[in-house]
Image (cartoon, rainbow, N blue to C red; front, side, top):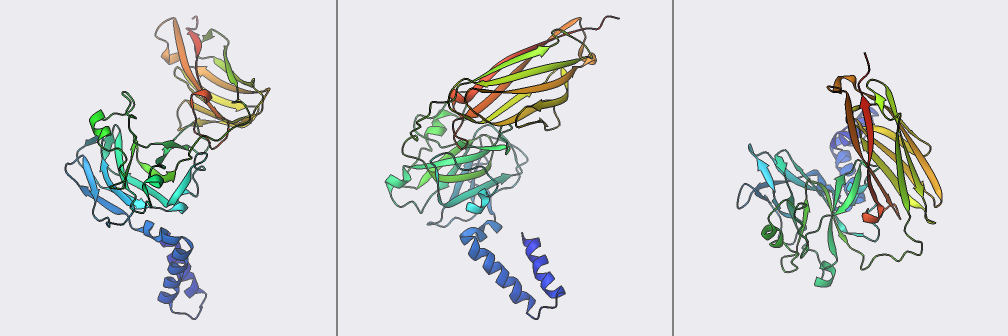
Length: 354
């Protein structure tokens, strides 16, 4: 943004507008800040420095009555230790993000971004101090939302509720000791609320809805059927995977998304009769975004691949692929277990006869 502003200011000189260049630039800065409220603070990240240990960081400066990140506790950190910082983004930081989950409302534009150059692993705790919380009842509605990378989302990102809450620790999910998780429960006295994530990025402090929205329509009933043809397939020959989604319910399913990871097969193409498909991250990961699937309708995905001859060290190989699909009742909902499908598709590869 700074480069754009400098160019804007310089363009005023090139057009020979008779005005002091410095004054013009300052005027632009003031106008931009006025438009974005307090978002001008986003231009100066807060550097994080060592706290009580190398696994614990605190900001160089955080005013007593200032909202911000009070601490970061790494789940795992490898030397050499490199810089970590956080930036206040404000509501403008969500310009290109998906909508907040259904019923959630952003609290006082509290959107932050955490960046680190360190090599980290495991679950991390990001401790927020919301000094501007008006009362304990309001504080009790706070949630920490995290914008996570999600290859199944059309935008590549989706929101997760990352809030640490009493009794929320899960073995095999939260890779930190339970005692550490329990030690950072929400606390109104210190205005502390904590998020637990496996990656950093963008966080938002939001007011959670008091109850789930009442839905008049039943939850969509989506099924998935997958076939591999020919079965078996000779090494080096093409194989076609046909995946058919059927919404057997009466209400529409929103954001129907699909993923298949090819292993012994080499990707050629992927098409669908609605929405679109693409190869992800230059790997054999195929994702399809079908959009809305109305009740009593179907959609079909066709993936064409080729079995790799070089993968055949024996006469027969069985490639078992996991297929994953998600859908929602409303596009801005969290994905829950009712909207998840996991199944397997088997392709048998046989060695070509010499």
